[in-house]
Image (spheres, rainbow, N blue to C red):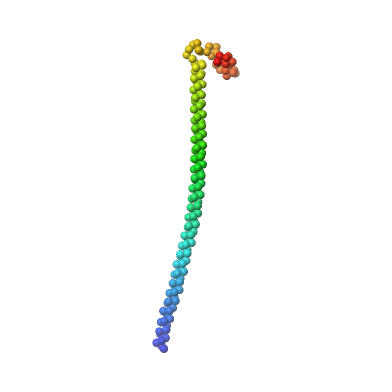
Length: 141
């Protein structure tokens, strides 16, 4: 029996090692599973953050598009206003040229017979406290 008793503990030791090995494998498997889940949770969190960033970027892009459209509309309005005022300035210049020509023709003729008399010219001179165009000058015109 003494020979059998020596064999038994040897048989038990390898069995115990196998049991310890199986438990060790489970610990490694659990650790790997936990690591994988942790990585998945982290990736999901990063995906949520990336989605939030993307939504924020889209919102910002939409806001910028709206601002650009508003600016383009304002530019069109200003260009139309510039055209309007340029046309008015052109019309005013034409009127100024016409008035200038009429003044030159009426008051600065080169022919002596066509010139207004000296009395009419004196009456046309502006005097403070009087009408802008005296009655005598109105009759002469």
